[in-house]
Amino acid sequence: MIEICLDSPSAALLAQHYGAQRVELCANLLEGGTSPSAGCIAATRKAIDIDLFVIIRPRGGDFYYNAYEIEQMKHNIKLCQSLGVDGVVIGALNIDGSIDLKTTQSLVELARPMRITFHRAFDRCSNPFQALEQLIDLGVDRILTSGQKKTAIEGQDLIQGLIQKANGRIVIMPGAGVNPQNILALKTIGATEFHFTAHQTIEQIEGFKHPHFPSTEYQKKVFDVEKLKSCLNIINGN
Image (cartoon, rainbow, N blue to C red; front, top):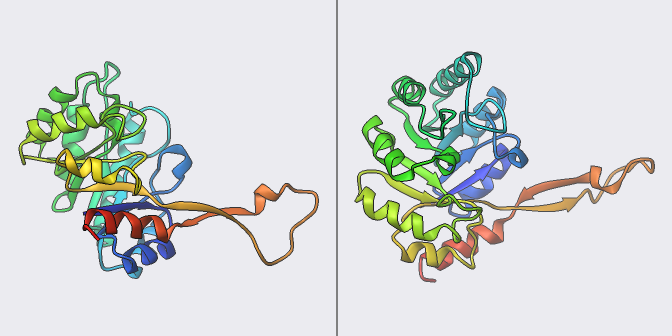
């Protein structure tokens, strides 16, 4: 299973065309992903038939949320339900690095029957194996993790330990820095689902460019089809 983290309907359609099985839709990818707009969710749902998961995150930064931010997340979960989204991606912590069980339980219960991924807030947990058991008890379907390191390949020892401890009770999905050079190593430790972004930066080719503004203002990130194809070929043994 390949899940691609994307920020637009057009990129999601390309991902589907070239073999991705699931899209995680985000805004503000440079901040680690925040909730996309209702219009973006609706247009993406219309564009693709594969699974569509939406991140439920009101802002960048830490994962300690106040009552207003929790209310915002609940509203966005209801919005996703109304738009036919398949799953949501959530995460909330206490100040001591433990899972915010009360908030997480309320979000999980509200989100059903959509599926639930707990995002990389998990990588900020003080006790990952305790957090694993708590998320299983709450009925979460999968955990996105880099093994509490900057990249999944650096955290592969913890990821492997989590996969073994989970023993099929929850999916452990590596993410962060997953690419064609390391995806096979992550498959070898027992991972069956993989999460990554596939973007490349291009500069506007046509049209007027104002001379008083830097060329970087005419750059944008676009979906990197070749990265997706390479990863699929490797894990499929082609």
